[in-house]
Image 1 (tube, rainbow, N blue to C red):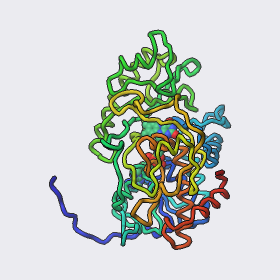
Image 2 (image 1 turned 60 degrees about the horizontal axis):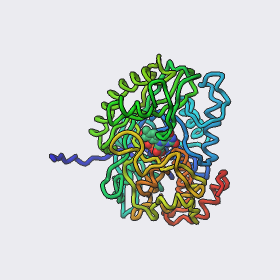
Image 3 (image 1 turned 45 degrees about the vertical axis):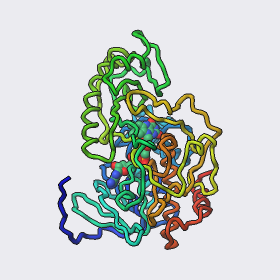
Length: 435
Ligand SMILES: Cc1cc2nc3c(=O)[nH]c(=O)nc-3n(C[C@H](O)[C@H](O)[C@H](O)COP(=O)(O)OP(=O)(O)OC[C@H]3O[C@@H](n4cnc5c(N)ncnc54)[C@H](O)[C@@H]3O)c2cc1C
């Protein structure tokens, strides 16, 4: 590959803070709130997009999934349900479905009340590392190239862009072959007769329709690797959320691959709408209202951390002494890496675990890099464990715990790995988290 040597240059220092959170998805919002509510005054949340929420909002996600308990998620859902942005008859409804615009504002309100500083439209492009310790990041935005220094950096970018730039060790995707789960561009349909429409919510949900069984019809009629039907209700009249575009063999950290995926998903959207109009009761007159402003990437880097979360940890419902996220529960949601539907190792309706599991602090601490914590889907775990902990309520819980740890480390002037888990847990309990 041809290369170019950038000239070195001086750049302005845009901020010096205690806790810098990079990426404002569920994990980043959780981390910023966890840190600020733990008393940290200078928390800065930096986000590449124009809104907070990551996949939950700009990724146009349908719902908070699984049966994870999370006081913070309940608070967020409660605030969303009271939003003036909702249709009047939807206000006050208690459920886990997402209204993207109301959710964006709910997050913003909580962040504002907690005193979190926010910088949108800002890409984190490099890490500042001295003597094996992350000291801050370099950003690019309309304001140019800038530096931000922090006592503790939290990488909640989903892909772990900051940790990777800082040199933290990671493995891509599945053990052995590095293959990652497929990507999906979510979109919303209008014009649906929601009183009688079908809404299969998992690959294992089959629905009889006049022409046959809907999942089988999708496999026969949609262009591969599309070929499954996942449809979710919305809070807006006549709208449904569609999780049916599907592109395999995509490296979510490669812009050219993401571009290819985006274009393929947009082609698939046309086939999916025609398919639903023809075969799915209630969708005869549907049309596309909007698509996500970022493609949904399920899996990329798994960082090497002090503990690698495994399938057994989840199935056995392990209660770790150094827990920072509790009462987590979801299935092994591994999408087929070669086509439509569920991978042979995935289990949705058939998933069994002994109970709800915890996530240890050690899974958020990179093996050999100081000054930085991981939060969200990028923490240390196997491909299979990741298919479970990538659920948004779990990422939010992890974020909150990591934010608390970061606040303690910053206040005491110690590296994050030196923070006693018992102190993180005491603060989490104060924030309403139950072990
Ligand atoms: C298609 C799809 C369907 C899913 N379905 C569900 C579901 O139904 N329910 C559920 O609970 N979970 C679902 N998930 C899983 C879940 O949405 C994600 O695993 C979860 O959102 C991860 O949270 P996160 O905060 O770690 O990352 P993200 O939500 O990805 O947020 C990362 C944020 O960081 C920002 N960012 C990234 N890089 C940079 C950078 N370099 N500089 C600055 N900002 C950056 C991004 O813009 C984004 O806002 C789904 C995921 C996908 C992709």
